[in-house]
Amino acid sequence: MFGMKDSESANPFSSGATTLIAEGTDVEGDLNFKGNLEVQGTVNGNILSDDENARVRILQGGSIQGEVWVPQVVVNGNVKGDIFASKQVKLASKAVVEGNIHYNLIEIERGAEVVGSFVHEQPQTNVTAFPKEGRAEESAESNNKADKQSI
Image (cartoon, rainbow, N blue to C red; front, side, top):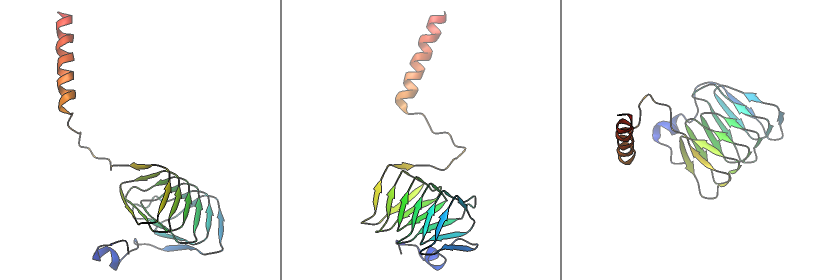
């Protein structure tokens, strides 16, 4: 599914328990979980996870009205709110997202719909990017002008 590598298809879920919100079930309020969450029903509230390997799947017929803050997000249903995925977002062919998607890695199948913006979030590192050549030259020139003015 979604062109997974062999290692991913052998174990598509993160370690930990799987929570199912079944079709016909309505949940009101924020939901905080660990492991895996499968949504076939409706959630009116935010979905959150502190687990760095957590994954939520909004299946066809599933609906979320609120923000999603989970490292791995798979959507094949409806999400009305922003998605914040520190690792990966997969949008299947029946996905409908009304909100912005903040992602590190994204995969989109034909037919998925997004009404919002895509915001690429790079992981935090302790490495400083090199300045662009033009900026380095400009700052050197401005430093020289400042030195001349102070003399």
